[in-house]
Image (cartoon, rainbow, N blue to C red; front, side):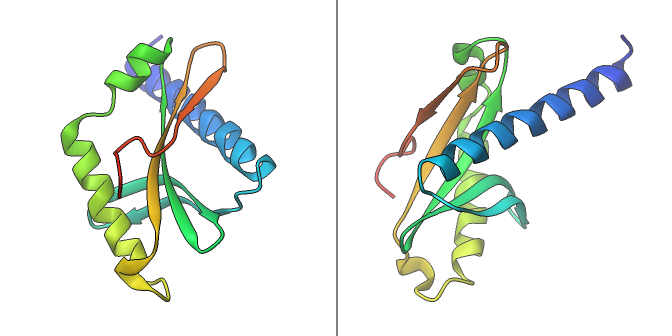
Length: 122
């Protein structure tokens, strides 16, 4: 498989993983308010609502959970936080909006694990 085809396959697999995670959040009563929201800091895969609070969700897919988790480094976490601040600017309570960052890991078999409040207290 050439580089372009592999990139396309990985992109589609990532979209499928995001869709699976979005369905899981909605099934658990957290409506998805945004998908692939892009700010100056970068892109947030999913944004869900938990009442008046927001959940910013980063989806990472790889052949196993450990490899998926390794794909999220400090620089990307900082970009996600910056993008979340941009998103919050449009919320009624602004930066006072309660929020958390979840990381959803998806393995090569399509199984997923959600790490709630993965960045610690926000």
